[in-house]
Image 1 (cartoon, rainbow, N blue to C red):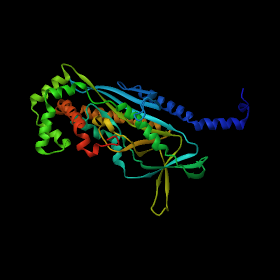
Image 2: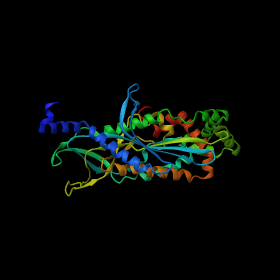
Image 3: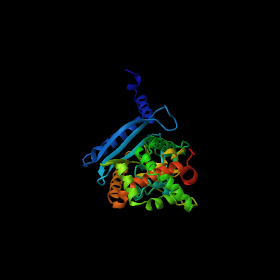
Image 4: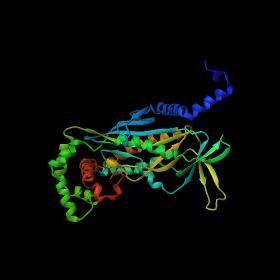
Length: 371
């Protein structure tokens, strides 16, 4: 047996080093998430899960990274006689443990980025898909801003500013996982053939050139002008005689830390500064290469992306928001009109086709670092 086991100071030092390695935090997070899974398992038709995942990052093909924890909610819903929904709401979680580090949030007005939690799938680009924009309110986060990490020894002696961009790097890692999950999505292959058979892209290009409109502005007007016969031809060729289930994936990237979070109310003079402990916060990062080739299936695009930051104590209430988002998504889609349900396949298919053809040239706001 090693001598350090019988030495109180040496034993304490081993414990401190193990905590610094981050494994205890990962184990605690795994336990917390498993408890939430057990709590939600009683809901009929909802399938929660928790696991560690190994994935291939988009910027390093042939190598593999491990995601500390992946929490997911899966549900299947019949929307009408032709369309079914396979919904997967995920929280990829990165755990970051740093000794004597505490986080301080300076509130900002960059709340628009909160609309960019990744939501992608077959319905995007259609009026049915547009109904999903309102569902993001379920992820409302009051504490949004810029984070500063300080070294505070033993929680009592302030030291210095922590220079490591802890949350930024961890946030980038969880978006790597989200990107790998979206990569390769280009809709259903049958839609390409149907569009070609009906010569819809040639007609759309002539329509766009005639009016001198951008393709984003022209597309819904073109679809509205299509005859009932053409729409029905598309539906019959696309669906055949049965119901097809279509995927919709939502991601809420989370960084879990083993420190408290504080909101800072800072006056310009530096006087009357107030601190308030908060359960969670949203910080904004920029991810190189986002959204790249995944833009065609993504609901909201933009260079600034949200990451939720919390600690194990408050992680359960953050994960419950995912269930609220799930419910909001299902409610929004079930409330669609007959026209939205009838036309979504042709609207979404043409949107993806037009994005592939025109997106990089005519839509500067879809451009990314990959362009």
